[in-house]
Image (cartoon, rainbow, N blue to C red; front, side, top):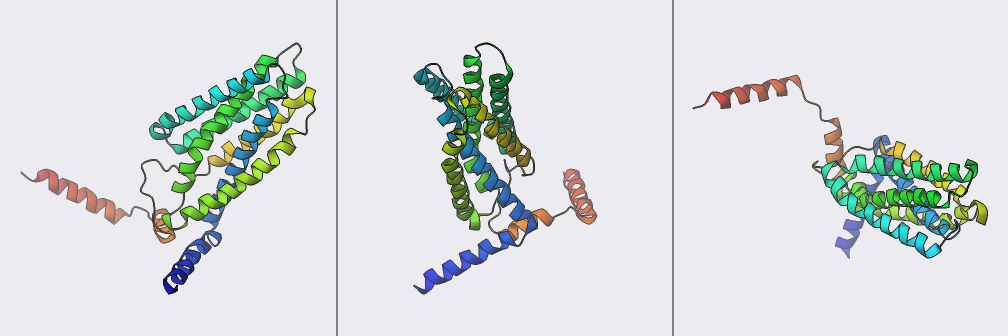
Length: 240
């Protein structure tokens, strides 16, 4: 029991510095916003699929196929180009597609149902790609000691977004169901902009504690260190 109490006290001491450092606190708030927008957009677009029109089963099949494309593309983009470009690009793609579908629904003449469905499905694909990436990206943004706390808090934010999704989707009438997509689109564009404030974590050494994280942020190459490295390289090259 004493060991359990000590470990609990130690984990609490590791979490508190997040709220004392402006850099960590800002990063933590950005991650919470990203998770909230993801869940709100994902489930909101799902609720809208049955109210846009045409065949609901075919529309849902299109959503499912493009969602699978988003997941598969994440496997390649994530490891080749990095977590940050995928986060930004997929959010911007989803936001642009959702806003475009709403504008077409409000201002375009004629029957544009299939175009609206296609743009909404593309928005769902972008959100799905971010969903597959955000679990890895959020964990890598923080040290090992608080990683489980960050993921747990992020999931709480996502559940709040999921609970809010049906109410946001219900704002439009049956004839204007796609108009609510502009809310998901604008939020996705904002989330894409916030993602620019996060660092890239691909092929980087992850810190084990908040102290290690601060050391990495504060570490700057000094002129003496550069000169020493250059001297060592010259010495090694001149050896037989």
